[in-house]
Amino acid sequence: MPKDTFLNLPDEKRAHIEQVALAEFAEHGYDNASINRIVAAAGIAKGSFYQYFEDKQDVLAHLITQIGQAKIEFMSPVMQNPAGHDFFTVMREMYRSGLAFARMNPHGAQVANQFLQNRTHPVYAAIYADSLETAKVFYHNMLDMAIRQGDVRPDIDRRFVIHMLITLHVSLIEYYFEEVQGGAIDVAQLDDNLMDTVSTFLDFIQHGLAYKEEGVPTHD
Image (cartoon, rainbow, N blue to C red):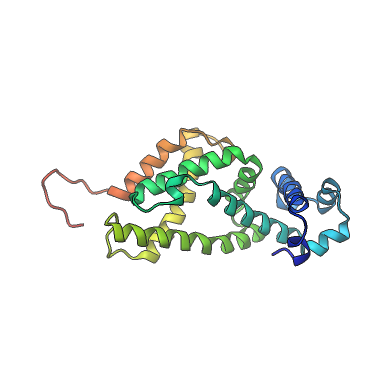
């Protein structure tokens, strides 16, 4: 986490340093990102950088947290006030809002792309592990509400379902680019066609694989 000296900076200066650092990571990735370029572009002394952050990993972890917070604030009214909407509508809006957010924040989308492509990298893996706990809380709250509303069975193993939803989210993005688009993963190239894949994904989550004849009871 950034040091208090950074958090106490004027908002405009703090935001400028964050934007410069995000652009550096987006263009060069973690390994090739340069603290020298960041401080030069931000107009600060290198010594000041180390008064603000421990190292490059500290900066990247902070930026990921900032992106996550900005994304939550950007979410559609359905996501901000999910009560009254069924679980699958909320899930669909999560992806729709995420797509719009990625378009409006290309540097953030590029950094997210680096995470998808470098999940075994120790720095990306460490930051992802921290973010994972936030995602688990998010899905847990969604499932709680869905169960109360009668959208999801109350007898599900929540820990298992949360794990699968998070894992399938990554698999959905991989499938979209590799099978639908026929190319390498590039989050910056997401388009409206993603929502067709999301609909297929949500249909699978909601209805599963079993064939159900109309009027014939099932063993759900």
